[in-house]
Length: 184
Ligand code: IMP
Ligand code: MG
Image (cartoon, rainbow, N blue to C red; front, side, top):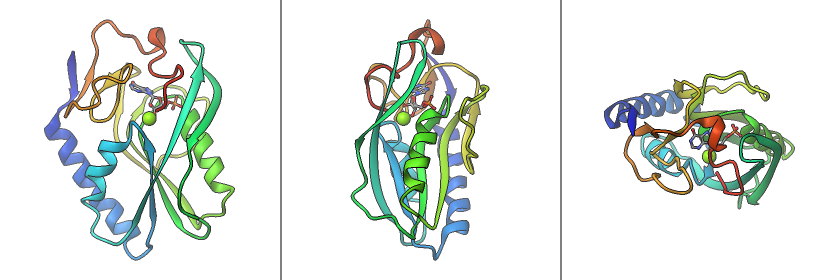
């Protein structure tokens, strides 16, 4: 296992994002929409740094693939509890890979007429994406490699690690990551 973003670097960057988002969204009473399960640690650290009133809700999705690539089918496993019409939304994900998941969710949420929808991702892979929505806030841009920790899993393991690491012998394309039948 090779650490690519240390605990210290994560902490500093999440603090910066918290300050930026606070400056931009203070007074807007937004709803933080966190994508389970990968986004749970990032979300919980980030919201504790937001110095303004906001609400938090969760969605859960699964992406089905053939093991090596995403099939382009995303399914909503758990919907929001909140009515988001007329509200400012901050959609929080752990990592954007092909962009399929975030694209699906952004389209789904947009149909519910929010006042605005802004994407926040802790990590963004530097790959040529099929789905290319603008990500307003990005923690780190990383190479196209399979990573775990700080919420991200490989076969549901490693989510608890306080840093982001690359697993030895695992290639993003070769394993298909967790884009099988598991949820994000
Ligand atoms: P996308 O739909 O291809 O953008 O993939 C997004 C989802 O796939 C993320 O929310 C993660 O759950 C998962 N994923 C993509 N890359 C990785 C990785 O390197 N490690 C762990 N999970 C990943
Ligand atoms: Mg995820």
